[in-house]
Amino acid sequence: VQLQASGGGLVQAGDSLRLSCVASGRTVTDFALGWFRQAPGKEREFVASILWSGGQTAYSDSVKGRFTVSRDRAKKTLYLQMNSLKPEDTAIYYCAGRHRTETDFRSWGQGTQVTVSS
Image 1 (cartoon, rainbow, N blue to C red):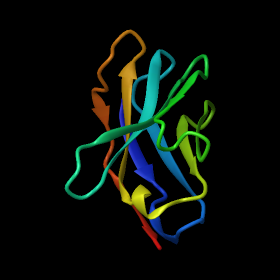
Image 2 (tube, rainbow, N blue to C red):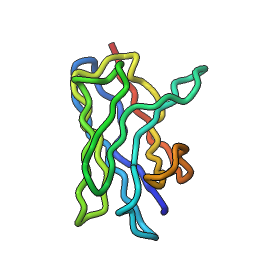
Image 3 (cartoon, one colour):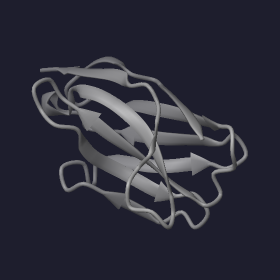
Image 4 (spheres, one colour):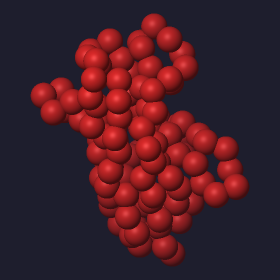
């Protein structure tokens, strides 16, 4: 599956932003799609994920209650609604996919930069 993320930008602390990730290629019915981020000088970290078929979601503790992951099956698009953004949310955000039977995300899109100013 090919993934293409978009929607990043420069916002102020407290603002909201929505990222999108369009999936193409093979069907994503049996996939989990997720968001990861990498801040300068830090390792890439998990943000959120969703099972495409059943809609079950998972979040990191750092974004729980502020971010919402969702998908539009018809548009084959993954979203990440980010509210109450903080400067520490500044990072390059990546969308990724894994088969539901696997644990590792093997399909990665290009990143989109999110910068939150204080």
